[in-house]
Amino acid sequence: MKEGIGIGLLGLGVVGGGVAKALRGKGETIARQAGSPLEIKGILERDPAKGPRLNIEPELLTTEAEKIINNPEIDIVIEALGGESPAWEYIRDSILTGKHVVTANKEVMAKHGVELLTLAAEHKVNLLYEASVGGGIPLISPLKQDLLANDISAIYAIINGTTNYILTRMGKEGLDFATALKQAQELGYAEADPSNDVNGTDAAYKLAILATLAFHVEVRPEDVYYEGISRLAPRDFRYAKELGYAIKLLAIAKKEGHSLQIQVHPVFLSEDILLAKVDGVFNAVQIEGDLIGKVLFYGEGAGALPTSSAIIADVICLAQSINLGLSPGLELWLDPNKIVKPVSEIETRYYLRMTVTDRPGVLGQIAKTLGEQLISISSVIQKETDRMAQTAEIVIMTHPAREAAVQKALNEMAALEVVKEISNFIRVED
Ligand code: NAP
Ligand code: HSE
Image (cartoon, rainbow, N blue to C red):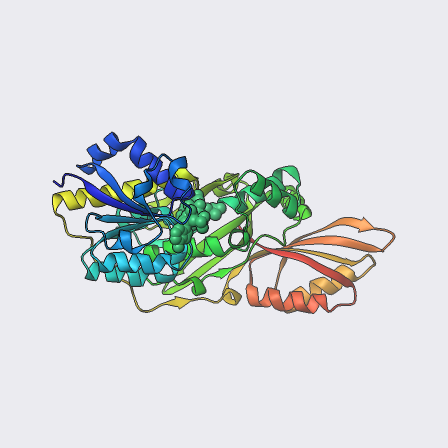
């Protein structure tokens, strides 16, 4: 047993601040679990004012990463800086100096995870990253351990709290996107620059991490097809509700034979499905395996305390291994044969909304265009009519169709003289 395990913390923001507070506030409990006390030996932070606000002794703070990375008293480095660089270089250098690392950084793990995990195995240290996906919800550990006996066939996930909050407000209160986003920012759910959340990048990083573990292939961010939520309008939510659906930003990873389908985009989700009931900033991840069937993980996907829960559990796990003299885990085994289906090859149902000239024969022309691409209509509803403009809005639900065929039909319909606007198309997950 070591008398104390030295901790170096990179970043004292929302997550780093939460970790420092919990390490101090729950010191005894954590020491009992870890086998020895965890002692913060240094903190990298640009803003020196953050220390006193969190009752951190000024002498622990530094603006030089080397003082943490090269400190022989530090056994475990916690990276809570965010962003790709310099975070990934600091993780790499910590590994190279023989330190274990815990990170909450989805961008680094999605872009450099395999390389860093391989480096860690070579240097006989561990790199743990439970907090990188779903905040406090256990996801990485179950995929690495508890579900190992399964062939995982699918992951369906709501893994971005900001967008789920915005979509919930749009769906339940009829807010438009800009108003819902503004409120999310005012409440501190969305960041000042919410681009990565809103355009789907954040969820794509998280899905790449989960899919790599689930399917044992290196899924890189560029393998994930993604779309954001900004093109959704209040009327899409109204029509979805009338048809028995909720709209969610869903991260989907499926395995069929050797090929993978990995995408993030808004979907119509049948209201009967549990994931459709996940509202507000909550996250939920459904994993499907041949032995377990379906298992659903639900909880707070962000925030200082839930995220600290995941980070500190990783740290305790490392401290236990250090104290017991255990070797780090096995090297990640990945199948080099990766086939990711382009989105054009997926087959699903679609919701189409368009504005057309309100006169006889128009629906016939639209049905013909869809029929020529072998797209079968499941229902058509004529919604609002504008008598002055002599236009009508129609909503079409299709039977399962190939994405490539739907995109071709949408282009052809947009060119029809009777079609004034293709307003939206949304994939449907029943
Ligand atoms: P944050 O509040 O912006 O904290 C990051 C802190 O690190 C800031 O204080 C920042 O200082 C400091 N920093 C960044 N780069 C630095 C550098 N090169 N040198 C010194 N200090 C530096 O971000 P956060 O929300 O805590 O997120 C941290 C990480 O946790 C990210 O990877 C994020 O994706 C992940 N995460 C966050 C949550 C969450 O709920 N917030 C949940 C799960 C995972 P400045 O402010 O001066 O830039
Ligand atoms: N910005 C993320 C979200 C939280 O809204 O879910 C950190 O992963």
